[in-house]
Amino acid sequence: MSEFDWGGLYAHLIASTGWEWGQIDNLDLSKVEVLVKYYNEHPPLHLMVASFLDIKPSPETPKVVDNSEFFRMMTGGVLRG
Image (cartoon, rainbow, N blue to C red):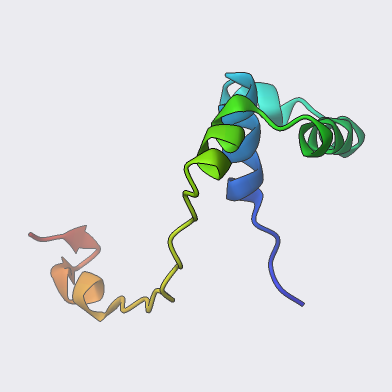
């Protein structure tokens, strides 16, 4: 099972509504579902412009997390730079 992209959903709702993070937090999932259904039928302007200009999302490259450098900088619980 893949992880749901909550950040992408928040970004979509914020870009589409102009709301802030906290306002999105106050929505329950049934309200989010109604908004997403509406936007699928009536896309927000930024999505229509991207489609018209044939702007495609750039493919994401998998990010490899290497914490070894971070842990090498920590000595005795204090971050040294």
